[in-house]
Length: 389
Image (cartoon, rainbow, N blue to C red; front, side):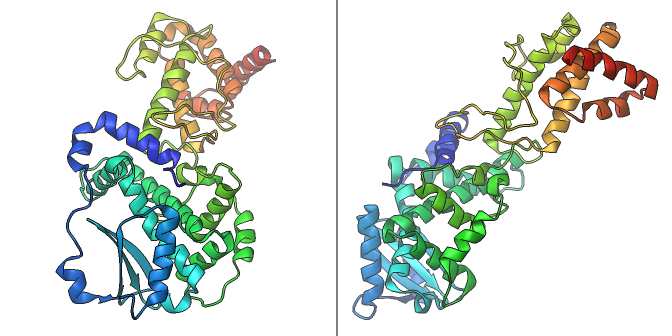
């Protein structure tokens, strides 16, 4: 049985809490029918003339529990297939010469991929469809904040991976699913899915997909293999924790991380003053009393265990990219210099924190900003190293 990805559930919970009015307004099932545009510009594949297409469609629909009437159309274009969410009818449209390249099992996989979109949009009375509509509308508005645009991108990746699971569920065979994917992507009539899966194993996909609407084909094959093995594959959607490209969920994580790190700094001997505490409290949203520092101190030179933002947690710890580490270094330096009365003791304390947190570039950054002499830097670094030792 297909279930939404953790990313789907987390974004849904966030949107319902933050944008409930917009989400509610967009919630609802599909509207209308095929309409004149498709009837005027496409060829309907009726069962009498195209029984194989309908047999594959029924097989996929049965595997996925889709009870709607099925309709299939063919149009000109590049090799592709797409799903139209219509009231009472599940419509799959084929483009180019795709049908000529697929055997019946492969066609069933493609049908499963397309019909899986309907399964997701129908789930929880159209809850995920409403999020999809909201993110689509946001992506089309030039005023939309970058966090929503990145969420839209990742949401699309998650939805395609979900649909790939539908393809595998429909045909019941990983090799067939990957073969269909390869034929669709490459235009070849003969492909080797096993070699493609070996190719996927050569890549480090923990850095996330760089796709804009779909994950890379090799990443999709890798994700299916991981899913079958009951292993985490959502790192493909989220990638590392990057302050330069956060989605809505990462923005929350980064605020929480900043607040926790600021609290740790403000509670550190040598920096425990009212001025530093006041400055650190500003990293709360809204600003408020200091929280309890993380114990043990977080390390940023290894993947950071993340908390659930909303809904289901993403299970795998997230690597931290250099841009995020640099931001944390500046946060540390800002607090280390917030109270002039802390003097060298405050700077040494901050260097100790940097060493314990794995922020290896902190000394260079602080030196660049504060203009230490070589002698002064060596003195401060030696004192910090002695504390750590």
